[in-house]
Length: 453
Image 1 (cartoon, rainbow, N blue to C red):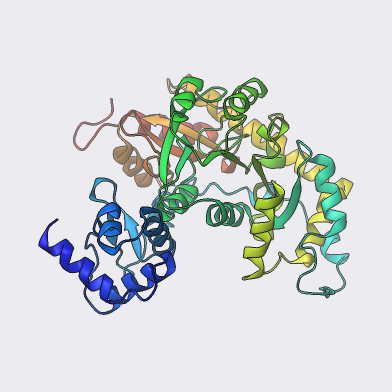
Image 2: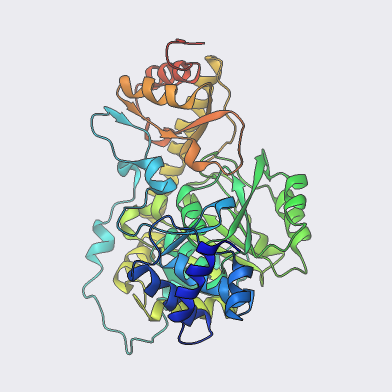
């Protein structure tokens, strides 16, 4: 073992007050605070540290998980685990994908819904007369009337259901509750950047599986399951960024591969009510292994900050306990607003109109690109995953025309393959031919000085 590693281990040992994961995490934190470890310093390998401190590798791994989730450490592939620079802002995939930029006359980078297609709130807000007071801070976090409506439309009979502050809140709660440092997790390739950020921050081993027209490719999915897999993250409808929806046949096949394992399936139905695809869930086959999240951001408004999630009773109990240590519950006032929007005939009709309009816009844009020689897959949702010759050149060309799109690289998990950009075509309600001309030209644009190809 190198002298520097021995010296670091000695300094950590001096600060170790108890032989537990928490004690080791505290010792490393104090070593960082005292200047023994600096940002970007590499920590000794887990097994070496465990041997020198007479701890189990599991204890060291758990300590690394605590420190990674706290932002104190980060993983860097073959370099191992290093000290994070807590003074520097985290860039993250999500920030790279949707970094706000001024000056675009048409910003199609955001993935957000068209505000004009959201249901009106006048009636729903008029029906709310008080914020209400729970009988206890430990009351059931879900409004009973809302729970009844949700359960009546859920794709399967779930063991337990709750309401949280949006789909990403659900993802973070599941990740914090379910996953530990070093766990293997299967995700779609490409995938949603914020979820990848959360998984990478948790220190898990992310395994990408490419998509075909019906969902995760069976051969690659089967290969990913050769080793133990703690969780699989899927977007069953209108996958962001590709627009691919999971077919019922493919869902049944995946469920068959996972049956009898301890793998938990986490489904993010972000498209929800604006999706034109049939609702499908592996929970139909694996209710005790499936977490299903239904977001209302795209259909009813991002600022409602609400999503429903179901899952196994024990896991959902852990999620509820974790929330009790923080926000406790999602606003019942907002839940009453959502209940009204889900049951009022006019609101239901407005959401149905939005779904049809998004489908029309997407279909028209796909046809326009095809006519210009650019073929795009997927058939649902707000976004298009457009293949491009050179990602950077495409972004620059579109920006020079006043059009913002999202770079494809933050969405990707597997190396290699063609470049892409994500275009939120749900926001293109006029000037379609002009925008399609620009996107098609950008897709053919080469690198600096090569012009269009």
